[in-house]
Length: 133
Image 1 (tube, rainbow, N blue to C red):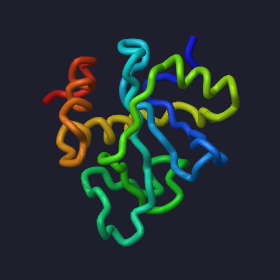
Image 2: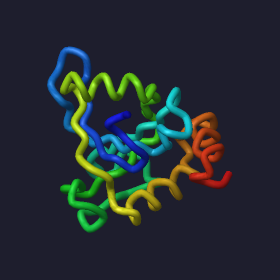
Image 3: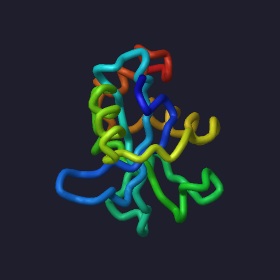
């Protein structure tokens, strides 16, 4: 069984580094498609210049949102559920728990219209009945 599921928040170690500062959200359902698990990260808004404005988050959205932030649709990660499980077993992935329903809904609604999210990623979510194109 995988250590991640749809709606989980993660910190993932980059090769040669400690866990990065970004929180990653498991947006697709690893059970429905274990070979393609879509992960999107949250990054600080930092004034908004050059940031993706399709899903802006505030501290009231979730305890993991420490300051105004946004979902970065242009730099997703697609992983296999087995690889995520291996990272979890090797302590290179930390599961921060499942996010609230309202936050996950906000992210998914933004996925359907996000200008920077590739069509193949939106199609993956649509195939899983998570969004409507």
